[in-house]
Each structure stands twice: as C-alpha cells, then as structure tokens.
Image 1 (cartoon, rainbow, N blue to C red):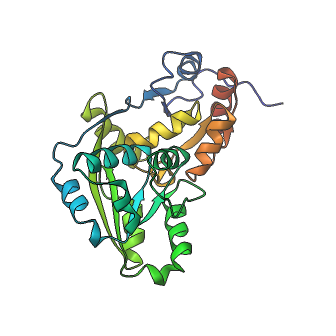
Image 2: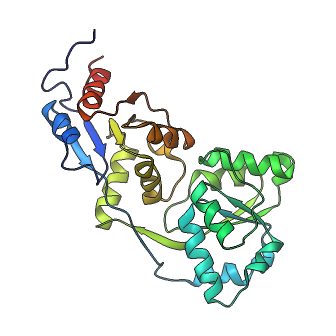
Length: 267
C-alpha cells in the first residue's frame, strides 16, 4: 500500500492548473502539500491588429499548393476574412486542404470546404507525416508551398519540419490569442521554456484544447517537455495523447489526484 503523502511533500514544486480549476479541492490539496499553484491565463480570441499579411495571402492564393488549418480558430478567422473580401468558397478547390482536429474538420465541412488530409493526431509531427504520406513521401514535399493561417505567435515546429523537407511555408496572422493580460502569458511561456513547471493538470479534454489554443501550437510535447502531465478524466488523457503527451498521473477524484502527484515527486 502506498504511503499517504505528508504535508509539504511538494515544497519547492510548481503545479500549473486551469483557470476553471480555482479555487477547488484540488488546488487546496496541492497547496496543503506545499506546492506553488499557478493558473494559466483565460483564453480570449481577437482579430489581428493588421490584416495586410492575411489579405495579401488571400489575394495570391494561386501561389500556394496547400492550405493548412491547425485548429478551428484558424478556420473561423480565415474563412470570415476570405468571404469579407468577396471570395467564393469554391476558389479553395484549387488547393489541397489539411484540417487538424475534429472541430476544425466540422467547421470546414459545414462551410463546404473540401478536405484532402485529416491527421490522426493533433501534433505537428502527425500533421507533417500525414501530408508527406499523401504527396508520396518527404522528397515529394520539396518545392511545395503551404499557407497556414495562424495566431500571432512565434515560429513553430511545423515550419521547421516543412523547411527541412524543402517546402515553403507561410504562417500568416489570421487571429490573436489574447490572455487577460499579455504580460501573464509572456511570463508563463518563459517559465515553461525554463523548465519551471513541474506538473500541469488537465481536468477535461477542453482544458487540453484551450491550453494549445492559448499558445497557438499543437506541439505541446515540446512546450511541456519538462513537466509531468496529470489528467482528471479519460477524455483529458486521450486528448493529451492526441497532442503527443503521456499522462502518467490520472485520477477522477481531486484528493486522489493530488496524492498521486505527491507520490510521483516523493519517489
């Protein structure tokens, strides 16, 4: 039988939780065990400050072979702007289209946009591999051009993979992910990059998806490389796996989950 964690077992450890999580029994338990509990910012989506980059891409669609939608937000904001500029959905038939995730696929289908590739997972590697398989291998990607409507964030792993294969990828700003305060998001990203988060807790599938949307990335495995992954239900664990994350800590009871986190670090 596993020993019961003692108070201050998590002293010196930092646990990141959802903004929907506080204040709750889990947070209180974690703090009782001595953890420093941080909350990631709430997700708010907004239009970009400047549409010039996106507008130029839309007016020059003939220069692209592929259109990639990494999430449902990219679909929403791109198609809204596309139609605002008086373009018809049928114009997209000239491109190959990749949609990542069930929500993005549903929105594309509802807008009658054809989809050529649907990755079986949400990670950038899965997306890259799915397109590679479709075109006939990595070598066949050389010289292809990809348009990726994205959040106004930094370069990501997908761009690196595409460029290494000899493709050209234009990630244009179609929307912004805005935290309650920009500074809090910048600070959190710095903490994550520096390995300052010991554990992150996802209570639901929506938590995982919103965390990815907040940072505008599907490459959660890289962003959370230094953190233990804890999930409060099976749907959260499955969605985490879709992003390439492995949840070693799972329990549907807040007290049990906090205790498992304690045991993980006490061992």
